Amino acid sequence: MSSRSTRYAQNGRVLGGRRAGYGPGQRPRVAYAGTAKGEAMRTDVSFLWLEITGKYRLHRTHCYADSGSTGTHGAMTGDGWSRVIDEARTSGVTMVRFIGGEPTLHPDLSRLMRRALGRGLTAEVFSNLVRVTPQLWDMFSLPGVRLATSYYSDDPAQHEEITKRRGSRTRTKGNIIEALRRSIPPRVGVIDTHSDQRVEQAVMELEALGVADIAIDDLRQVGRGARDDRPDIDPLCGGCARGKVAVAADGEVWPCVFARWIPLGNVRTTPLDEIVTVPRMKEAHLRLSAIAAGCTPGSCDPQCPPSCSPSCIPMGNRIPAGGCGPDWR
Image (cartoon, rainbow, N blue to C red; front, top):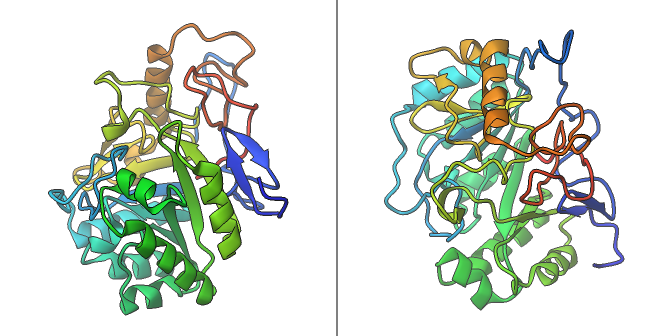
């Protein structure tokens, strides 16, 4: 690890500063009430993933959404997404993250971003940064917009082995440099997909470029990252159904993008604020608890299971690595 003060975290431990992606005052508020048996979940949601498309230029072997070139924009229309953004604001949401697939492939991204900004929301775009048009750069430069991307290795061949796209590292790196030149500070996640991956070298390369917000995350057993077909609680961090939900391109709402097998409702038929009520969020948490087994008393605080609440990076056994850390949304 470099001696520089770059902020990045690995496996739930803070390395060289605060957890990446977590700033002062950004920790979600969690409301509990009464006894442990009758514990109430959050009464509102402050963070929303908007998975607006399944289209993707790359074919990453670990993609949790199983996106690709044959993906679609789903059943949600631009007007439908605009309504969800409006409902998110009235439900207490303060930040939305546009994801996919590759969100920049959606024809309504710019309009939806401006809609979110017009409602007073912080809006982040999580893009592979393989292709960025002048119009997208203009949008990324707007006040209230954040930019995030993934990175894999300082070795082009290894990076492209993961993305399955020749030249992808060169393009992503070039656009990271361009973002920095435009004073757009990118948040970069280095995804550790296998044992011989040059993760630390990738971090050092990003540091040398001037990236100050770097985090390391492990492969999750979700989507193409799954090793089998069973619903698995181990890749989750313990924060599902607590202050954040995800909306898919077909309108389905999940407690997390990694908990896609637990539907809370569908925004095409039910308003978002009705979906994220206390009973539904509590039910989702209880479903997660029913799947988890063998929780060691004391390993989870204040409840068990899964992992450590309100948020931790898991080690793959429902026990947090390095103790609780701030929430990397």
